[in-house]
Length: 266
Image (cartoon, rainbow, N blue to C red; front, side):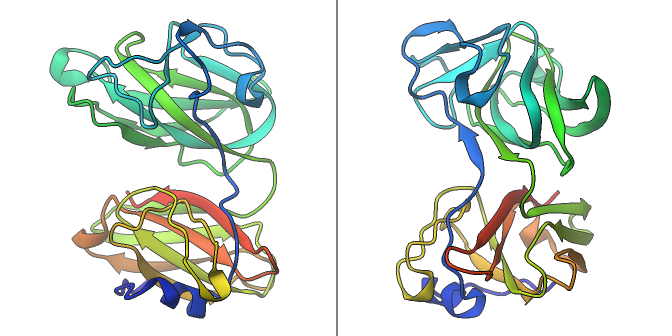
């Protein structure tokens, strides 16, 4: 996978040939006012027992999207149906203040199916993304850490089915990007950016396309085909310049076309 400079907004239109909107569901909490318990059913999550929200400034517990964020006494929330859980943003204290790193454990039907990597919050108020690292179906998420010393925001998930992308390996070094659930045998492109966001292609065949990436350092990293079964992978040695950046796939399969989840390069 060769990373090359994304010279203009029009370039991704011409190469990927798509017009799509990001298809992730993001629970922002920003329509909640004041402080109270998160109501069960909020954001289509069946059970928020033990989670509360508030909407005022309290560094370093800064929300990723102001003004609201949530905190917990239990760490667990239950969708009540199968979804693909992408991750969430966190801020607060970590091991430098004597508190535990944060990680997810994911469950389906009461069975543990995946344990994520960890993040160690730096008490600086800068929200940090924690990816689940899992593209299978789950119905329950547990956030593990020192409850009361972190906040969570912008919980991101996908309804069951659809295009999913994952990445394995360590950067710098060899990484493998895999995908499944795409429309078979269609052109696709993978974009790379410094951070997540809502970059919108301004014109051309991709006019109005909104990605889950920001415009900071956005590049076209790879173009190819989704494969005869709508799944595949590409591997390459990746340099330090790409580490911790974010990628997203777009598939030219109609109007609108399809975007994947956003994945961070480990």
